[in-house]
Amino acid sequence: MTRRCGLLIILSSPSGAGKSTLSRRLRDWDPSISFSVSATTRTPREGEVDGQDYHFLTEAQFQRDVANGDMLEHAHVFGNFYGSPRGAVQAAIDAGRDVLFDIDWQGAQQIQNSALGPHTLSIFILPPSIRELHRRLETRGQDSPEVIAKRMRKSWDEISHWAEYDYVLVNDDLDETDRRLKTIIEAARLKRIQQPGLNAHVKALHSEFEETR
Image (cartoon, rainbow, N blue to C red):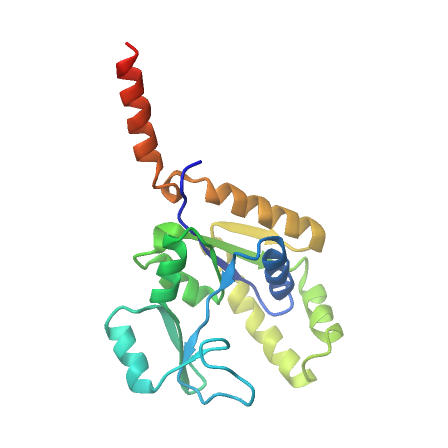
């Protein structure tokens, strides 16, 4: 069996489409898949651990990392910077471990256009209907009506970028969507570009072939 490179697995969806649940199921299925720990310039909240919840940076440190190409993607949100450090991701995929990104379409575009773009697998999760999306946001009981309304207003902007992803899954049945998601990942792991040892293997086969002629 030839060594493989890890994948940068990007999952995007509007809030309430099931992305977080699917991400947890992926980690249960394969614990070697790690979440990308984002960097941020915001102040740590109580209980948050540097390097575990976020990499907490000063704005100067963050801007330096962006200028040096050390952020795969970054954005300015509500007065703070957020981004995905490249170093840990590069080390993981070089070691054959997949990294999971829970980011929006803008971050997905930046990663797909980065030097690690050829190793990305982008998947967008669609809800079965807008009415069902609203119902899920209400029944999970995490947000106020005002926040739910804000998420619903933002949902169409996110959904409108569905065609920019490698795969799109309609999450009308969680178990079936989970099964299809794992099938996609297993297939992507076998892509030729993910198996750098194939060249050496084929050369060995060629040498063996020449010896038997």
